[in-house]
Each structure stands twice: as C-alpha cells, then as structure tokens.
Image (tube, rainbow over all chains, first blue to last red; front, side, top):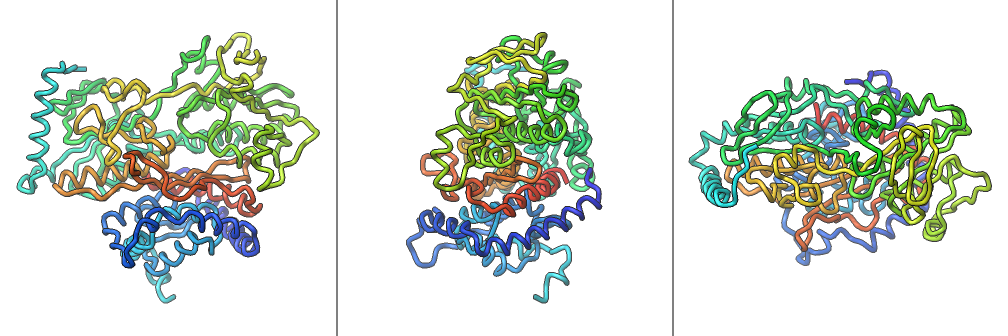
Length: 146
Length: 452
C-alpha cells in the first residue's frame, strides 16, 4: 500500500482527538435537536410500514447484504486495524444495535452515520448486529470483557 | 464482434433460457463448483465483484480482464493537483486480489463477445468462456462534445484528468506553474457524470492552493447546470474559506438555517451557472480561450470535464441504449440486452444512485450475491445499496452525501433513509473538520474493501 505506517498512525491520533472534541461540542449543539426533529418527521420507511407488533426477523442473507454495505468504511466483514472508523467484527450484537439506534434517533453525535442509520429498521439492525458478532474480531481478548 | 440477427437471436435466447433452467437444478452441482465468472474491468466495481464472489463461494473460478496492470484510482485524484497527494499515491496493485483471494487476471483489451457461445474475445486473440459475465467498464469522456476539443488536445494542452493518468500529471504541472495572477477555468460537465461533487471539490482545492501560492489567481467554474449535488454545503464552505458570495436564490434558501456572509472583497472563485451562460461551446487551445454561451474567456489553464457515457466496451458488447449507458434489471443488475451478463458501476442506469465508487462497490456485492445464489439454484435476498461520499471544500473542510437505497414500489431504485442526505447547514466546526479526516481515512478503507 501507498500509505506509510507513520502517517496513518498520526492521522489516527489526530482523528481520535478531534472525535473527543466533537463529542463534547456536540452534546450542547443545536445540531442534535435539528436531527431528532428530522427523524421525528421521517421514520425509516421499513419500520413505518410494519403494522404488526412483532415484525418478521430480517433473514440472515439479507442482513449479510446490509452488513456488507458497511464495509467500504468499516472494513470487509467488519475488519479494520488502524483507522478512524469503528471495527465491527466481533462487536456484541446488542452493542451494535444500541449504537445504531442512538445514531438513528439523534442521541449520538455523528458525521454521516445518523443519516445512514435511518435506512435500517430495528430488525435489520438486529440481523446486522448478529452478523458482525459472528465475525472473528482481530483482537478477541481485548474486545471481550466489557 | 459476431452480431446475431433477430431471427437466430430468438432461437438462441430460448436455448439459453432452457440451459439456464437446467443449470439451476441441484443435480448439476458438479458443474456449479467449476462455474466461471468473468469480469470485464478491474476498477472499483470489477475488483469488488471479484473479491466478494470468492468470499461468498471460494469454489468459483473468477477471472478479471483489465487493460492496465496497475489501477489508478480516480477517487481522491484531485488531491494530486493541490499537492496533497503524489500521483503515485493513486496506484493500487492487484496483488492481493491475485495472491490472497485466488482471482485470475488477464491484462488485455476486450474486443467482442459471442453471447450464444458465452465467450469474450480480446485484442490478444484470447477466447474466454464464461458462465456469467460482469461488465464494469466505468465511463468514457466525450471530448468531441465541444467544438475544437479532442483527446489529443486533452493529452497535450487542455487536459481533462477526469480519468486519472498522464492528463492528471499535465494538469497538476500547469496549475502549479501558472503565472501569478493567471486565470484557471474549469468546465463542469452536464448530468449525469462520474462523482457529482468532484468538479466543485477540485475547484475548491485549487482555490485553497492558489490562495497560498498564487494569491492573485482567479478560478472560474463554467457550468451547464444551475445546481449540483452538495451545492449548499459546498458553497457555504466557499463562503467561509474564500470570500465567495452565494447566488441570491441560494442565500434566500439557506439564510434561515445558517449565517451567510456578504463579502465586500471579490472572491478568487466564481461559478457561472447555465442560466447565466455557463455552458461550454468551444475550446480554442491555441489561443487558450474557452467560449461559453455567455462569454469568451482568456485563460492560463483550462480543465475541461466533458460529457460522459458508459466505457467503450459497453457499447462494443451491445449493452448500451440511446442514453449511452446500460439498462439493467434493478433486482440483480442483469443487462436488459444480453443474457448471463451484468453491468455495474458508472456504466449502469441505476436511477437515484449516483455514479460513484461507493455505488459501484455496493452494486458489485449485490451482483456477486445474485450470481452465487443463482448458480446454487437459490433465490437471492432483496437487494440493498448504499452510497456515502465525502467531499472537501478545503483540505480541512469536509462535507458529505449519505444514501441507503432499495427498490421502490415503482420498480426503480430510490433512497430510503429520509429526506436529508447532506452535512447539516448548522454543523459545528469540529463536525466539519472530522468530515475532512474521515474523507482521508475513507480513501484507505474503501481501497482496502475493493482491492485487498
């Protein structure tokens, strides 16, 4: 690859610093308010359509299709090593679902994840979460425990 | 190329349909394991399709036919112009796809096909048989759309550089050595075209570079359009970074959401819209003039991004329609014109999906799944696609578009993730800086998902 380890590490450091700042700044931002308003007006089409109380689960193959659409940023099968984005492989499904719902409902600051999350229903997220949980994480021991 | 007449076409279509039905029977399993998927084009779409086909079914034989032994990535290639990247940084090898994923590569040019025998022919006189054919040819530039412009002029004096290569290097040299106070004109293309925010990002990055290295320079975008994808967030960035005054209708539309400054000082950067005569008519390379509907501009550097259509091989193989692009079945991107053939990426007609690398990447995965399931006699799941693009208004000023797509009730591909697709107008400064950091990270993670 054309990227040296040094420059990539430097970026990682500066990105996580900025991310920290962003989290602090966003907490009081009007941005969030605007976002949840937008969401309130436009629930995801896929959940809005469902009328029964227990919507059918998203099939594993469809969930896999959905999960593969994350890979361009979050790595093939959720595998990333030294990047600014969260590696998803091995992430507990519950954590994935909670995080995505927080993005979708504007409770978690984001650049574009809030908009992407609006494309997925609760059952979609569960299926995607199960897909990523089943992928071997690169450092299983450090990811587990918490 | 062997052209079938209408009469025989009907016969072989019937034959092919019969064969296709047989091939999906589980009893043919021995043949399926040896199934050969051939991919024409080793860009983002072709490479991703190859990789994910092997990921979904390692038993498949997958061959990529590609002209160039090294890929030069178009995404992020404007960063060569402002010295944010070296030209060599754009090079991507096929080594990992070959060595780690067992994908075969043939470096050759496709000259035709026989859809009946399911063979493609190459300039190197090879005949390659396929069970399924994926065509991912990208775009070709229609240089001849403007009077006085052609590929030779693009190579030698008025580069396009929209497909990265020698023209990128030439344009970088011209821009970086432009005389102090010179004028750079960028001719934006009509819709549809590859990388919708790209021309505006390029103009922005050069304005930023000039403000340091050539502060009296001028950058003029001449445009056949009156609006563009990410226009509001991009021009808000220009307003903040380059004293750019937005057109009145944009100010009216946006000022309830965000403060837009009215600058007394003239900006280095200007945007001439179609309704103000921005459409390019003629290039005079000798006198370095560009003629638009509204005016004739003397320039020091001209960058023409001409109208586009599907890559040449798409029309050679009979996959295009009168639009110059390739009609496909939305469910699996199967060509509407040639059986056992799929068209993905910029060359396909994909409704609301923009012509972007990210679109090609998710289209490739949907096609890979569709082919693997069909060869196994199973039904593929309902498709879902995504597109997220980061773009820069300046080196540290990121913005984006974010889409999730499904097939809609009308049978076309449409967005399903709400009305908003862009960075909010009231985004915080950290938000904006993060967008720029993520853009740089995306260049690496995206390249890895496609090519490694």
